[in-house]
Amino acid sequence: MIDGLEKSIDRLIEGVKTKIYGNTFRCPVCHLELSMHDVNGKGLVVCPLCGIVIEVTTVFGHILAVVHDVEIKRHQPKMRLHPLSTHIPLGLFPFSFLLSLLLLLASFIFPFIDNQCFLGSFYHYLSALANISQFMLITSVVFLLPAFFTGLYDWYFRYEKRRYRTIDIKIVCSLIFLVLALIAFFLQNAGLVFSAETGLIATTFENIVVAAIYFLLMFVSLIILATIGHLGGLLVFGK
Image 1: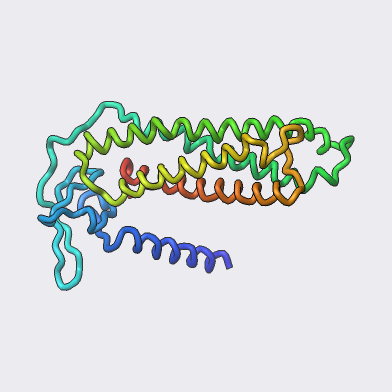
Image 2: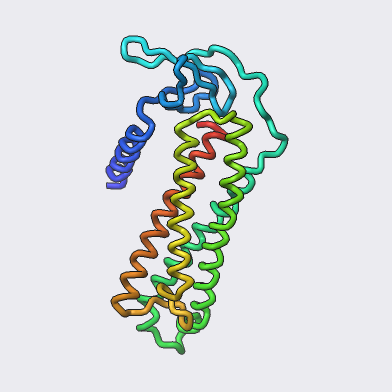
């Protein structure tokens, strides 16, 4: 059953990737997967990872990528700020989402728990957990801004503003993440998701609807952030 689910997920991912990337090929040197959209009008593309100039041709319907040259004047900063700056949002946002899920679980459990029992003693800490989750969420958003702009700096100088489908996706996903995460933060900060007194989700219909929207935003944001991190890892470490 698990194998079947994994295969279904793999097929779904491959279908989405094909729609976005189109036909792809691998760098002959570092084996980084590149898109035909990255190739310029002369049939050349510079690998963003290893700096090899690749000549791409199509032979009997098959993509043939061969080494054409090496980019020897490649911008190589001693310390790349972009990979360093991504660690805070990539590290904190999943914990913010995890704490929100714990509060969601608590909202179902604690109404039926006696405050005098062992689990009931944690009731007074739930509002603090909601504040920590909110702090991690806004910190992730704030620190994504320097990560975004240092990434643009890298693209401008290191990659000489060349268009790569991977970098285009990273830019678009970063902007979408900022919008969705900010909406989720404002919902939580306004007290529309978790109660400021108890840290639990109120049982009114309006609060349940807002909470559902909040968790959907957080879940989609987590997937987008994981995609950004995965693509960034490919540009740093390759396959």
